[in-house]
Length: 71
View 1 (tube, one colour):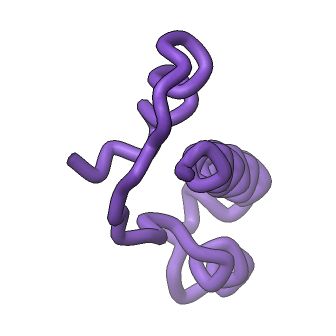
View 2 (cartoon, rainbow, N blue to C red):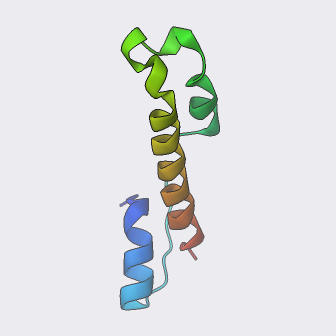
């Protein structure tokens, strides 16, 4: 189904093999790099860019974890 976030749960809880095609990434390292550019962020978010970067990096970690669980 392409739900990469569920791969760790299925693999570790049920012990099954995961075979899949998942179109990645929803968030890429390019997006994280763009956070520092003013043109992509409004004035309200300028002092909160670190929150957005942390969020993107956390999602990238979860996506990579799902990818590692695929056999």
